Length: 445
Image (cartoon, rainbow, N blue to C red):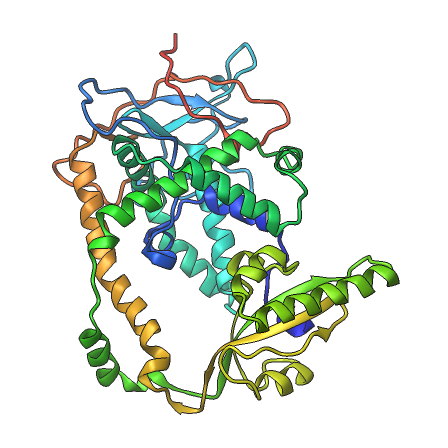
């Protein structure tokens, strides 16, 4: 099983979710699963803006500067050094004599602001995501993917801000969903109580209230995109059949199995505890065979890094798994499970979620895949059009040297000189670059 586990990033689920919640996700993230999943910066009103706020500066760590000079690379972020975001030089004079440090505001979206720290955080998440999704890629391929996504970082942050603001204007309430998500994260990480979860998040350097608000913004965005865009997209069966008949070469495949796992970890356990954990694993297998949903059991009881995703491991061909695992799973049909397998890290249960025989795959095995593909092809341009309309109905202001790649001609965009108009104290013990409180504009002196 070690061969399988090496394919997964060994990261705490709640830490991974926190990073995702503050990510500057593009359309792919907005559209994942049901075609919708994203987050945004703290919201504000989307209409009724009569005054044109001046793009200036807000507080952060030790970086502050004038705008970057090179508009062609205007949204570039620092790589592995301490170069200020956007390639702008540091401005020591930006530091407040009272110990507060000011930071660039690179864009205003109605009453909301986007700072260079937001761009820094967006870029870091994007880089980490590229590395996770491209584990077999060369350095050149990884850098090419990063370079392709980097120009749209500011666009994505503006998109997210607009979507969350619209959700608030529509009185969408996700408070119950936030509580459920937090409880799911607690259960996935086997944390005894919500109080313990809050303590662990705070101890990691995150602010729990900020963490919770980021989850809320993500859920608000999902709801408004579902309501305004994805719910209006229909892929009928005739379209699926036509795509299948027109693209049969895509569905010529070797023998494969799509797997899910439940792992009961025995790391650091005593012999008596291992015996009890083996009984736990057997009990979970019995529940699956009695009809309980494998994915839900994985979410709530698996100790593996795939628990958050219902135990999804991916699709494997012969020769890609350890021989003892391969010999078992390739004899199973869809939805069948292995017996409890003892590994070095614990007790493992595998389920064959789908099985593909070598050759042309029948339509019934690939129709969900085709439907998702056609759905995304329809939703993405409609979502882009919807965001275009939100821009036209909103006040968007971008600092010189930075570019919103989705700006529309009718959008009110003013590029003005920076003035230090926002200050904010840094909370001791918290990583402000990632989890700052809602930014409130205060006219400076």
